[in-house]
Image 1 (cartoon, rainbow, N blue to C red):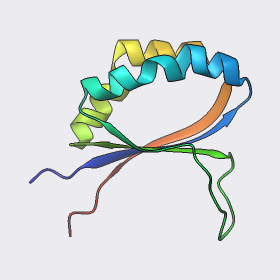
Image 2 (cartoon, helix red, strand yellow):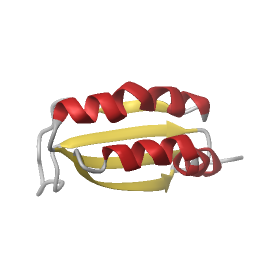
Image 3 (cartoon, rainbow, N blue to C red):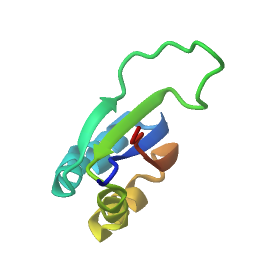
Length: 100
């Protein structure tokens, strides 16, 4: 059985309008193309033990690591990354889900 995979991103938005027009308005279609689902997309967070370096957290679930890697490697997604780099700072990882 394939394990689900998750993309975890921690983002500092330096220009909300630029981020929205260059990234947010386009990323959902690419996530859906690879059967991904946003589980967390911003929202209120409470720091309990230390904190992430940036305020915004994103969690996307994919059916498998291959789906997540294909999404990230998609030339259209990479163009979004390039277009958005001047508006944000972020860390991003792909991590396998727990299989029990």
